Length: 426
Image (tube, rainbow, N blue to C red; front, side, top):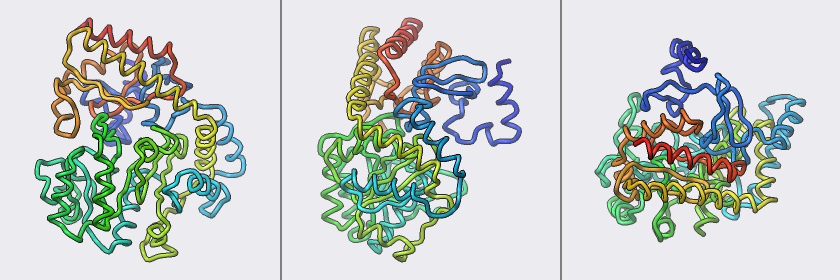
């Protein structure tokens, strides 16, 4: 029995499902989770000392690679002064100033402790600002696990949301409307049916929780125009895309300015943190200035701020990082496409910059319904083969692959060679 198996046996006795987040569960791929002991650069090492090329990157924030020495040293220096104070610190001011100075759409920002909290708070702010209750989200876009956003994809674009989890009362989602990603008409219909009632439209500008689904030409621009026309707050959930697609995230990449933006662990260089920010007039509805309550006892933790600000400054000072990651992304994902074609498979590979995903389906994937046509049993075979041969992926068809700046020509070639081995074994 492996060390990971032993740890999992212990874990299931004291942790629901043996994991502290379902995203870590290996049940759908017929395995037990790998327990990670350490990580450096593009690699993680498990409890049995096996090394893997890592494409999880702590679900995105390790954009410089694991255990970056500059980030690590910043954390050590800051920790010497104490880990947490529950009080205002200079570090959180520096982080807020840096983001506001460098992201044009953000005039004010508030730190929180997770992406879920950032989204939940942004929606509350939008409701408080507009005096409206309804929100629009898109099927297949994940915005954390707050009650109002745990809504099934469903086929009924026009209906209010149905809870997608036990423990969420129907009343919590009755004002959540679900549209179809990449389908502006579905959004227009919701505005027509709910005239003057929609507080916010929230969207992952690149949907990265149903695999990776890119926005069609004009989709994000159309959302911006609809929200402006209807006095509705446009929220970009950039928990995954922020500081990854470009320094300015999806807003910079696609030339669209949102009213509010949410960030996650990338602004903590992987430490638990989040933030939401945007137009001053909206953000000033937040307490203690305004009447919308939001709080977090340990928000703006100084150690997390030191880690995140160090990483963001490196990204700002070295734009070539984005050029390199885009190049490596093209090498990897286009290489996968070529191999799929070479071996006569109908599968699809979607990617943008450093984000990518393979779908085991013969149809183009442009929304949630398309993504669900992927053969999850085939994915499980692919996952097991890649893991057994040293490639660490998210254990779900609907998770993205994350490249970091630490991935190289060598790791890309090795990954493609292993992928070709899987194709030959099919």
